Length: 637
Image (cartoon, rainbow, N blue to C red; front, side, top):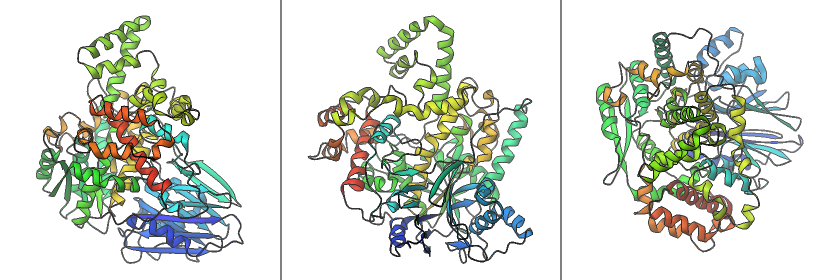
């Protein structure tokens, strides 16, 4: 796991400023504290910060082919590199290291840009072909590893993190106002945009090339829900999944340093541990997080149960409201985009605990819900759509019924009243967002006049609608899974996973997001995933013999960080002082009186916690990345 950066001048006669690449690397030192390297050749410069995981002695980067005509900097892990290396050696390629990095340059020599289709793993890399004067940037299929880029008109810059790009004075920090609304609509920023007008994300499953000053972006992978005409029987599919899980977890255990497991107390992380324990003869360290304070849900007893079953060396840590508040500026600095993801802060603290315990690599259970339909949202909306169909022209009665239940204390059920009339493709923006969230209902009062002139609700939600159109022949469940796999997964869940673990110089691996697992899940009949009230049916069946029943059958809770309570009580003054400060950055976009009203509504328990947290981190983001001069943040560890 590492950090990469670089620049290509379109004018071949203009060399790279020799001080630029080191300054770009300094901004991402936390991603690779074990070493650094750079390659400069006329108009191109490549930089690399290294976290040593595989081939500790000879795996330094940038790395080249035999004659030094192809160079690469790379972040991630390619889990099938050994079989690719054997294939390449059979074709006469000579290797000088045992790292997966070197496979990239040699496979590029064989296949050119299409080499990306052969890699199985999590990766973001930049490759320079000296002979062709050709730059290739690539990102893994699911988007586990980030890669940002910008075109200044004179050059293309790229990096693992946005802050590295901002080192170059040619990169403008102009705020993308349309993206502000999209962020607050989704609570994260889907698609290729960032909050900077000229900085973009290379999307998952895509690669970018620069040739003779021309930039081209190509998609090389997509998720398809094509069920075979003769699908496997359920018991046969369970056997296939068990074998697939065993293989993918084994592959994710490849490392020359110790590997640990993050335990959330849920099915997915416990399932990953159950397979990991089978593929090592070394002690496995497990890590979990709890929260200080009364009446907070605590995952630690379930994580400890899993640890005891599998005999791990278990570590626990708790987090308080003060810890949460004090880390917020660093949270914003490392996330770089104001994602509404309070559990990310908990992930930072538990990752830091792992690093302090000399563990550099962690496995986690992210992805099981997105692959096998584990969120209650999927079940609830499928039931809703069936009810709408059953009521037909009389579905107005259904809406009135939901409203009545909401007024009698069933508030969550009452929330479904607004979803009765519109079709799923109009209201399902992602598992966290609909046009009827608190923020989306308050837009007209929150935005100031200048910002309001910028907005178009259709534009803010059009990413999800386009994705729905791409799978409009699919069943409703698969359409929701597709939208979440293409938006929520890379742009929220995996941003958090990468940025918070790398903030502590720890590599996080996600075996359930191996693309073979996702493709297998996509090929299954719907009732193998969600069947009535049962969610993740086939995954639970595959783990029934290894995961304790207390964990397998417990109600899904996610990772419930009690930030709502903290912001209303322990952090009350901090929230108000930050968001209502004189000359707050938010004044450029929002009405201060409306912000004050929102904070008051939150204090009264009216369900605005996500909106308040989102606006709080946006304010902190603007102060750090737009209003102030950019400096490396002090070490987070």
